[in-house]
Image (cartoon, rainbow, N blue to C red):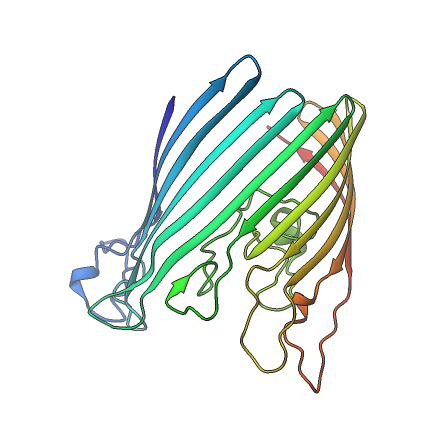
Length: 308
């Protein structure tokens, strides 16, 4: 059994001789000057599983984020106290590798101060991830499923997904399942924004989605890995603001093909191509006089990666 404890000072807004980050220029609230930091806490437990047929691990992570950076602000003094429980499991059973994770978020996204009524927003999020891959010599077959609850526009006092520009429920920066959809590594950092509707940008962490992917890989040599995948994504909650008819919630279908050649132990070259059959969610709203149109999208990429 392993126990992990982590603490991070995400933002230090303390009032001191060298820092004036506590909004004193907005209003002089001495009670909150020294408590406008953003602190993050983690508690994790991991248990190793070893039997004659199964090798793996299981565990859980408890997260607590306390963001007091908005305390005392004239535009809306509030504090955020967000919790999340994340159980997971990984196992190798014969040629099959399975991993699964779930997340349950709760707490207060917005807790107003000074008795300001009717503006509190609670957190109620769910996310699920399941992945399986089987290896048969040089051939591998696998698939992934993910669900991330989206924000329900009809419940303004509750955040079930991303709200107020905050990614309350997302899949994280490190998971890039497609070359276009939900790819932060290539599109978010290098190519730039590819937006449609404001709630359906592809180059950011996956959120508000049902996602399914199937993939097949071939390793003709130990150095070369070729992978083909087919992915589909649907929004959990459709946007509901603005005039006109609302679109359906489809992000679209994406076909990707990549080939990665391992030059050395820490140097590899990847050549890939992807095609997105763009879904109607990127239309935004269909106005009766000016109906929106969408186009399919594609990417061709080559990348040299040095890892150390």
